[in-house]
Image (cartoon, rainbow, N blue to C red; front, side, top):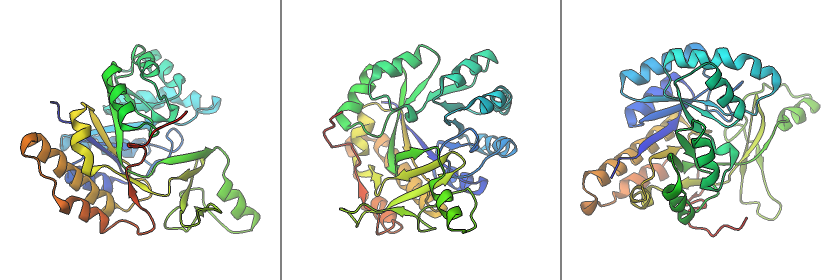
Length: 309
């Protein structure tokens, strides 16, 4: 049984160091011009520093190049991907086929992870990209446990599953929050509006649910009203052979993300030490609950729901 990789996100070099020291095997970073829904802005000079910091600690750096690319952005991609290769980042997360084309054109040796942004709910599509150079597929959040296990069995490459944090439920290229504030003559910067700024979408029929609105260079993103938390069910996921678990740190504090990584690290290590003697430590979940926003429920997401497409 292979030990699954624990991946998370970081919004700064300081947070990157904290989550690695907490037990993350790999960290996802990127630049808003090329990446979607990032915890922070890492331009090339910071990416280079991040790689050095991570590699010194035996961790990996994955750069998100998941944006919906326009023709203007495409022009700068060859130089950007070349720089990532020179910095020796461990993988590029991509969705747009243009990334794959340019990656081959510049003869880059950086690994390619195919993004969940493409929402491929079947393993045949994942295998299509595997045949074209992808080494990992990031599974859509909409799949349940049975579907994920089936996906894993038939997929030619590694799969990554999100085990903790919020998820995106809507995206528009338009800056809806910024446009509204501008119309109201309220000064603003195009960055992140969310939990700490009080921007939420509330449904008329379920007003107890608050969906954070996150806005960045790439538009407006409406996020889930709850957080996935699968720490109690990690043994089931590990036994299924999933190679990579992701903790989404977007719109969370560094302390929260560090605490979550520590808890999942302890749970994975405990199980892998001796599965037959595995006993869940209640302190793992309790440490997360103590920092959890009381307005945001910890749930199993879609893992145990029947899906109808």
